[in-house]
Amino acid sequence: MAAPMSWRRLVHSVYSPAIAGVFTRISDRLFRARDRRGGSSVLLLAPLLAETDPAPCRVSRPTGSAGAQGTDGLCTHFRWMAEHVPAFRVPGTHIHILTSPDQFYQAMKVRIKTAKRRVVMASLYLGTGQLEQELVDCMEEALQRSQDRGCSPDLKVSILLDYTRGSRGQVNSRTMLLPLLQRFTSQMRVSLYHTPDLRGLLRLLVPQRFNETIGVQHIKVYLFDDSIIISGANLSDSYFTNRQDRYVLLENCREVADFFSELVEAVGDVSLQLQPDDSVTMLEGMVHPYKGNRQDFSAVARKRIMEVVNTAHVRQQLLNRSEDSEDEGMSEGEEDTWVFPLVQMKPLGIQVDEQVTQRLLTDAGPDSTVFLTSGYFNLTRAYMRLVLGAGASYRILTASPEVNGFFGAKGVAGAIPAAYIHIARQFYNRVCQLGQQERVHLHEYHRPQWTFHAKGLWYYLQGQDRPCLTLIGSPNFGYRSVHRDLEAQIAIVTENEELQNQLQEEQETLYRRSTEVDSSTFERPDRHVRLWVKLVTPLIKNFF
Image (tube, rainbow, N blue to C red; front, side, top):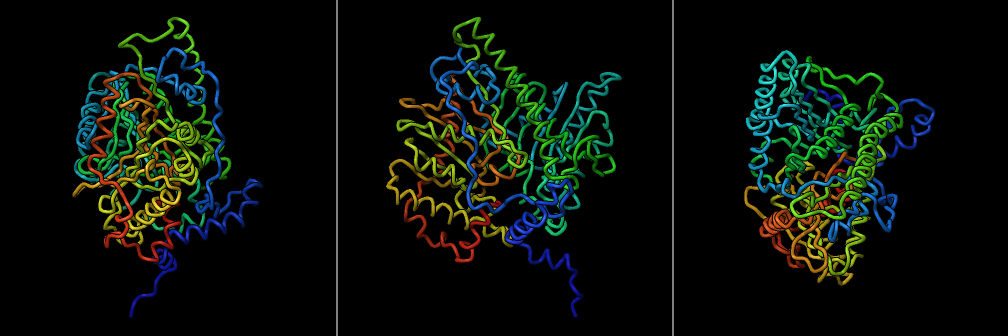
């Protein structure tokens, strides 16, 4: 006779995202009043199943900008960004587009080994395989070399990961980093961000495999002294071998590196701190993310993070004004490129990336072309309205089912590729209903034995055959990216022809492995979507 099942095992065995939605609704109604009185509710959760996308505050349309007046032509078209986010001038020759997982991996290894002052890495998690261990070994080598140079080692290593994903399993990101933390305690910091929306009974009931669906630290930033890689790739073996993503390397761009170092430090300050004995603690004076009051945590975290953004914004405005007063334009070979960091942390009340992205999509005129890509095609309703109602031509690239990261997964996760087929078909049908087939095109990425995780966009202005702007980083343009995770990307606006060529080659290389979707695509037997998958697709859109 089978042993009786414990209540916890029973809940785990029947858990699905739907249960999280039920707990969300219950907790919001039963405990919202209690949390307003200052008590910490046991069930307070994020509004995961919102019927519609709340409209963010609109970015105003200034007639001029103090932050970008020294730039002629292309950059003038996007000068409004400098009114809302920090604007960093850099030479386009210092920016390099990496195109393969191996390039990304090797670039990190080389720069970790040669770092002298700082290594700052933010990711969802660190994998546990041999390739990941080699990265850790590079850190150990650099830290040891720093100690050998003198009694006061200069090199500091700071790692920011997500708590839930980084703690999953017996062997995990934490166990990979503990030896370094134990050996180089004064030089090493490991911060584990925990969403404030996973708390109370939900935190107790949701199994490890699914707890990251509530919200995660999703920023991907890899910084070495004054150079930085912005990407959507995690620190895991597939991202180093056969999972296609996007990666941009900014060499010797100290101001940009300083900004992201300070941003990661700020998120780290409101995160749990890993200790050498594998315990976690909060910094003194910080609100605990799931034991403390939900609103208090968000307020403290928002204040700490926006201090970084606002300070950099003011500093760069003053610096750019000063530079513009000295010269009326930029001569060839100088700082012909702008970098705008965009941060999205809706659980903390920060929605800069959403505002800027909406403005970009709104401003895209009839003669412009936007190439937009996402490994998980799940545009928010607001973004979808803008794409379908805009004048620009759109070519949207997404993963075919066989290169979806969840292809072949067990259980509920195995239905995710089929759900994305259903989402794509709904979108394509809407395009056809509106008669927009000549303007909006949908493509699927194919590559045997690979998966697809690339995200971002390339923006071609009227009459140009090369992109002048790209968005690159961690956001997916979907519900999770906008509403529940911590995200960061950069907008690069450039007049540098070589950098424009690199961006065009990157875009063309990705799209070269794609086929365009038409009505016959969804009639193929391998695109059949079962009824139950269609029914749960609204849940999957909000959770994955």
